[in-house]
Length: 427
Image (cartoon, rainbow, N blue to C red):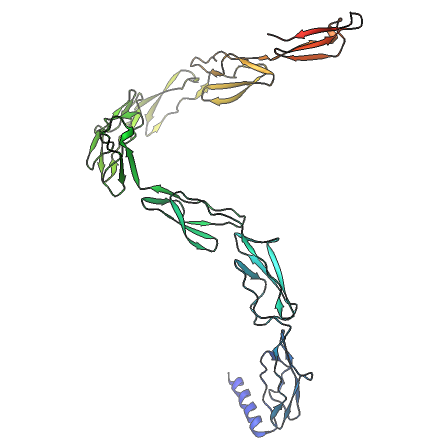
């Protein structure tokens, strides 16, 4: 810092004591080679060079220090061939070029369309400064097209390539609030608008009193009927349940619920403590089993435990001993000539015959619990074949195929009478 102040002091001292010296010039939009001393002696000259896109009117682009004053100070003006700000193109940005106030003649700028938009003809496009004007820029068109339709919802805001949806009254949004137009021209997942009420058409339910369609909104305390898998209960005559109403669930035969109190209650529009009906197994459900507890497994139909049909496991020192292995007892499926297995569902197989063959017998084959397969179908041909090489009365033309129900004339050999034999295919 001391050195800098010393330099400024010497420059001021030089100018004050040498009235013919000149201080450095400031040339807007131009530059020149600076003096090493920081000042200029009487009769010194500088040559000014204007920045790109600017020019000076005088051919002699020099200034001279005369008796402490610069003569013929040059002014760099914008060139008539240069261009100003480039055009602003909707949904496009300039790439690879910093900001400039003036662009020299023949300058090039490249545009790129935003995501979700594409330039007609290409993804990028270049404009050029010619004689003070920019050439025409690209047009960025929407590649995603029409926004996704959302039932009971509308687009309420558009921001660039994003859309914001809002659901109608009595509906609530499920899914994303914003939808984006991707660069590949596709839309992201759109939301759905779900009704916040339930409707019961009492005219269509014979067990209910006909009072028309009843709507129950979320802010009400009523509950809609429950669906209890493998269970049932006495339905309300009105088709809905008021706040604090209770229902008692009865499980279907072969099922039971864990809780002794098999009831559910409507509280502020929501069912609480909904009973679950589970299949009854040999041992009741427990979260914890005491030491030496035993459980017995049984393999499903078509499978058998190695060594026996059932097997017991025991709780010993906090661990269960090894359980059974259930193996397939039916083994390889039945072979069907000219047919294949096309579908397997549990212990069932479905067969399909090849072309020109039709199935005779059952479509499905079952693996029985005793390890045997049920009867398999057969595939019978839907055509007849005649090998003319093996019938001396016929002209030898190889094997001829005749579809079911069709007739075909077969030419006799020269040794026989002139004419044809008629071959008919039937089953």
